[in-house]
Each structure stands twice: as C-alpha cells, then as structure tokens.
Image 1 (cartoon, one colour):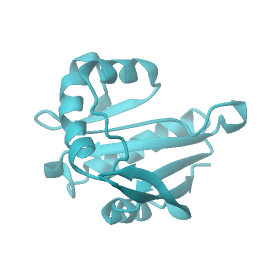
Image 2: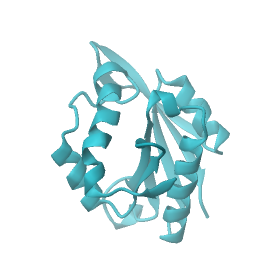
Image 3: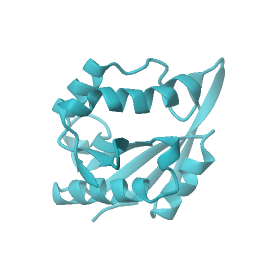
Length: 157
C-alpha cells in the first residue's frame, strides 16, 4: 500500500535510508539521517510517499530541481527501498504515484540523479521511461574516490 508519510514513519525511514548512506555509493551523501531530519523533510515536502507492507518498505519524494521560479516545473525525485523490497514492484508503484502527484501539481518533467556506480538504478529508471541526458564526471566524492552522476529525464506533460 502506498500512502503519505506521517511523522510516526520518521524512525523507520531513517533506518531504511541510513544503510544506503553509510554503506553504498548509491547516494553521495555521507551524513546519516536522523529522525529529526526525516520529520523536517516530511513536513517540508508536498509529496513524501511510503510503501507499506508489514512496515515501511520504501519511500519516494520529490522537490524542485533547482531553486527559483524559472525551474518551477522541473522536479527531482528520490526513491529508496529496503533491499528485501527490490524487484517486487514497490519502486515502480512509488514512482508512478510520485509522477502522478507532480503532474497534477503542474510539473513538466522529472529528473533522476543516479550514481554512476548504480547501474541497477539506471536500468530501473530506463524501464520507467527516463532517458540519460548527461553524465557529470566526478560529481560526487565518497569512500575516497570521485563518482560520476548520471542525469536522467522524463517528461510528464
């Protein structure tokens, strides 16, 4: 089931996200998320969705790609799943729901910023209709090495 995140989800969301932050190059962020960080994010975002099946299995959210009115219809999303939830349709369902929300709110396009060391993420987005539009070489730095950022785009309107 997909539903809007609520404050009571913050602890589970931190527990879900932090292993990806701590142990992988899927995200370039190296600072783990606290429960307070997630509470603030849930409160600040117009759309923060969770997939629930015997607990929170994943989430997706989006916000404006860059600040300023010129970017008002260009969004960027994040989608994170528990490893055990991958390949079960939860990610696709979350992305459809996030894209539907963004489209209804007037978004023209959605951007995915995918680590160059995450080919599964790139394939996932390609299967959803995202197209690679740029590679920013050495955009991220984590685990003592530079990592490429692959930008992928999908038009919503």
